[in-house]
Length: 203
Image (cartoon, rainbow, N blue to C red; front, side, top):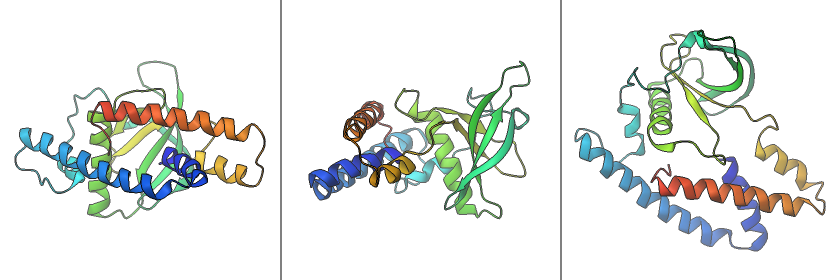
């Protein structure tokens, strides 16, 4: 999401936003159909019309990305979205002394069945399709045994914050090196998107 914002800023400055938006919509439609067709070949009972078929999949507790609830300590809420709250958290595996600062994306209190479906879809999609790449926020895993919050995602913590905030800050403080920084960011986003496309994992 943050990568798309950066790319849109650059394309807007070049006057190519409308053309790219139409191309993205066309590609997303094709990718969604491909994912649905691929999954349906193995699971004929799923509805092919919706990308959130991943939300209908049960979690396999033997998957290596399942994180025990006891290993995650929520520290402070960073922000709140449409259906999820984002926490700064600590990942402290019980079998060793190390700890890692992470982000926990949890369902909001009083979440609906649709919210649960969306969270399960995101978890299954990241766990089964995305993989690791230096230009993609790292999916560490998911907690699926927490009764209070329901299933939630555990992601890499980015110390410098959200790209959206950086872009808003630079909007009024444009400097000579800002354009070069933006080009590097967009290049990184492009590499990440290329990786996802090569895996047929564009959501």
